Amino acid sequence: MTSRKYMAYRNIPEHRNLLQPKGATLVQKGNEVELRLQSTLPISLPGEMNGKILFDEKLRRNLIKSKMDYCEFFPENANQRIRIISLRIPLDMGGEKTYCFTVLSSPTTAQRKAGYASKLESLDCADFQNVKKISEKSDTGIDSVKSVPGKAE
Image 1 (cartoon, rainbow, N blue to C red):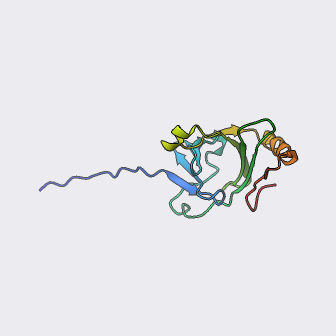
Image 2: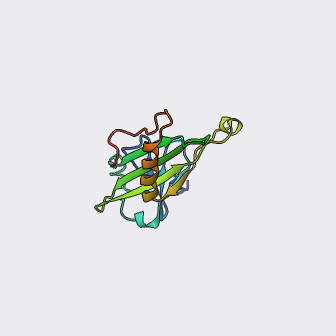
């Protein structure tokens, strides 16, 4: 009887869960780090993030105490809302890094029925603050700013 040695196939990417938003994870795939939020497509974070967050089996269950600021509003004379996110992530090597994103609008109803995930687009954090100020001044009669408790200021 001969024995064979099998090598296990490792299909589970290394990841760390974020405190805010709920269900968000940072995933290390090779040399890049991706941000994954619920109902959105993954987005790669810049290369400066490499090596500053540790990915280890022992650390996998520890939440990264991130903070999120979410702003949603309808600009004047517009038929679609604008959704922006600011995400502050503390680094394992000390310090923290802030990333800002625009959540692109949803497609038509026919595409949504097929199972659609929103797409994130990088946004300069200075632009995030400007858009947030504009949204707070907006007098549309609609709740213009919706923020998550513990939001970043």
